[in-house]
Image 1 (cartoon, each protein chain N blue to C red):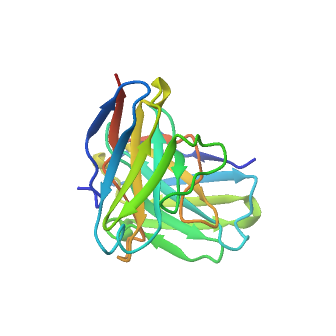
Image 2 (cartoon, rainbow over the protein chains, first blue to last red):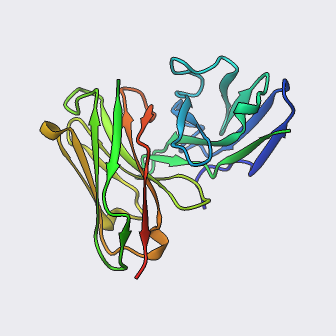
Length: 111
Length: 119
């Protein structure tokens, strides 16, 4: 069982916006601004999309944005495109001895 | 340009020890704040954080696997090595190494190497 909880799947139509949630506790998501989001296409390595809750690495589309409220972080993708169809994972720093934990992943389907 | 590549056996027998090497370029593991981590992903399942080593030789391990894992670095060779003892079929997974820059995230990942545990 993953330490961070994500919905198993979300879907949306091209052009729409979707939000993927990532729920933890005050020991991880809620306690620190060290939440990251990764995109993974089938058979490929994960790609960093968001770090430190809401920062985008160079080269990542501004259609991707991150936020946090309490113990839940969120990834929003606006103007959905077919190429956004992928698995998305959140991760967070944790004050437990683990240091870092991943969510269980969310499969995004673009209808 | 930062690149990382994992190497090691594709097949190991139960109870054997797995040794994986991450060979990287484009950065130095002696630079303050930099680290290299290992993450694995069983077929069809989620990512699992395994271990991380920082520039100053600070090492962190997944608590559930800590007794079986060892991570080391060879700065002169630009390599990070992960060993996992007592392999079991449930350890079958793609193993990734990834670059940890000065921020708390893995910004560049290797292509991954699939390891199957079977007799």
